[in-house]
Image (cartoon, rainbow, N blue to C red):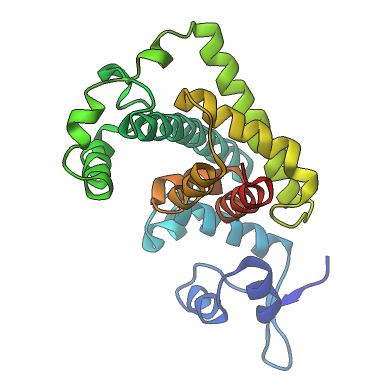
Length: 257
């Protein structure tokens, strides 16, 4: 591959030129070579190292520790990627459970279905539970605690096979919509309507009642109101949080029922 300038790498990766200069200065990411014009040039090896830097940052590892990890004797990039993929896949599965929990809680707060106490914290890491409760109380008011106590009896009545079917349906719908983003389809494109209808039908099943256009658009706003939602969708595909929410609102406006 041809070598890229620092500006080209910045545009490609989304990392600022200033940050790339800083990485060079601290020895975290050195360019392949300096040109006669004094420009930094990066090759495939440097781009792969930058990917590792950014993945480690996404995983919450401090910048000062990343160089030691990447430069450690025996560091295997392929094994690192495989381990990172599994860690992120596990997080995506947890976020999928979290989204379902929040959807069911919203339906319970709106008096649309009953929720079991045992289902209240599915998908939520223990350290996140207090934060999640505080957020719900802040959004919905103090009576949230009493309304949650009603539980989700209808969902509890589903068989394990029916619950798995719902999980599979959500997975296929979200992957189909994410593929629309990958293909460059505009958000809310009419070609996405069949998938968006399936998504809205899925929401209706989880709520235990029809999902109106207004409610569907409101759900789209909610998806962008909490970092856990955003992180869950961004784990599916970068930019998917905005793409999904925007498509939901366009679909709701277009269908209007």
